[in-house]
Length: 254
Image 1 (cartoon, rainbow, N blue to C red):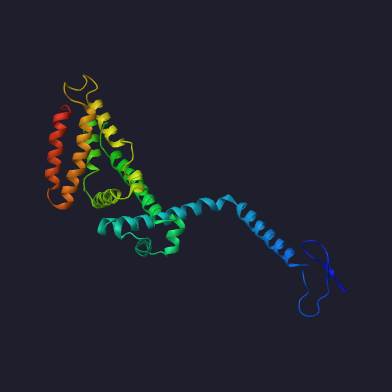
Image 2 (cartoon, one colour):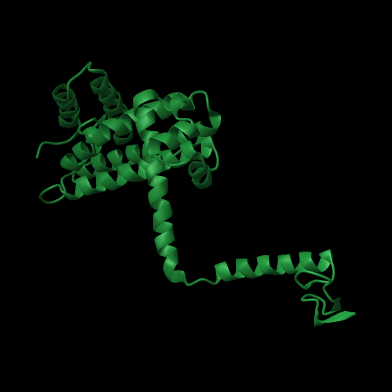
């Protein structure tokens, strides 16, 4: 005896139920096909959802990534990158290990992303500080502000310097991380050299002054002096006096 209802997949008439609910598929094969069809339909429905919710979802994901990255920074600044395991970072960020894995995949992916986010954070804050410089653009003032980004002049810059030192130490024994941390470009040195050339635009650099070499010395010197401040070997006032000495030598008086 056949039931009136056909198989939902192939349409074959189904046998009447002896007891319980009537069958809806004629075989396990048709049942599996129905499951796959539902899965495809759910996927298409998710892809077709209104785009209005996407910016909010992206913003939420970006905020969560930032929250986790800041946990990496705190651990790196206080205990070094060796202590920044996925589990430790999750605990410091107040999220589950699964959330960290979802957003970053692996520890290496987490460290690289946290470094890139730190670069973005520092650049954003540096631009804000540069925008607050009063008066018309002065190469000397801009150059001093650029070099000041390598000094622990406040809590944010002090933490960033500690984190970069931690990354530098880790990159010595991690070739994959070194490829990201020790990039081939020299954007800061090129910016400093350009400011030196701008300051000497009217008459050109004095004989014996190479803007590129001076930029190398200023950037590496400011970085090293900043680390001396972190260690307590020098004061900020002493470091500022040293940088002013070199800037007075390189740039014309205004």
